[in-house]
Length: 207
Image (cartoon, rainbow, N blue to C red; front, side, top):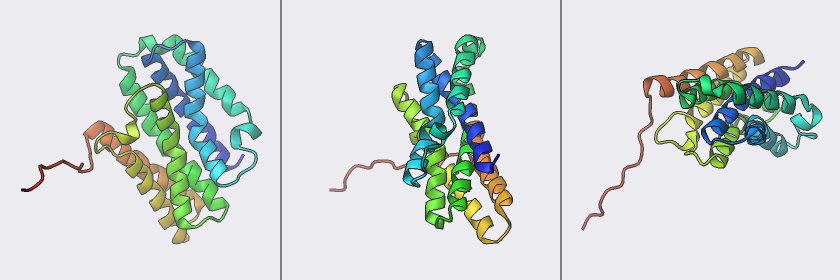
């Protein structure tokens, strides 16, 4: 099994858990759980594959991805009530999913010989779009757009780190480890330690 496939399976599982937790917060039925879990799990990877003209899209070629997402949805449907803070679980699962999905997008783009800007964008697309779709469908403020939080910026830093390591000739495995480590460190710092970027503050116009 290729590195991209392993990373995709891991990202699908963890993102599916976040989708199901979002569905529990929205009090959806079990079909709604499965829908949101699948949307979150494969959304970013689907856009990535379409942009890279990868045919067929990864979950069409291997429907097991959908089965994993649905299984995760069923598990959360019957266990979510045991969690003290589902939102906190969601944000931490999402942080780990981001740290797996960004390397998945980076790895595929590197394998296809794409340029550095495309590699970075594919990492960000794979990592960010599934969670964005989840939050929009569940009528939540998207995590990726929350004031000052390190989310897209964490994905960007991780993808840039991978490109730098790859350009230095240190090998694909090292690039992916650096990508995952940077992404997780920055996102976990934002969630757990309150790390933020400065945000725009409106000022009254001068007379």
